[in-house]
Image (cartoon, rainbow, N blue to C red; front, top):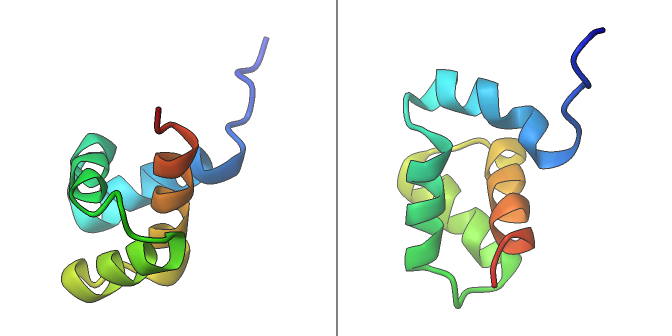
Length: 69
């Protein structure tokens, strides 16, 4: 049986790790530092500080915010 296809923000994770050379855990730790910012402010932070593309930054932030407790 084939593995179920990953959907949503996590579907970007392999290409994010390959392109930027950092684990998803690394990016979650970075977002934790700016957890009080709004969604788009967090996206802008990743884009500005780390030069991450908009789609990748948005996927990381969406995953981070969906998993906050």
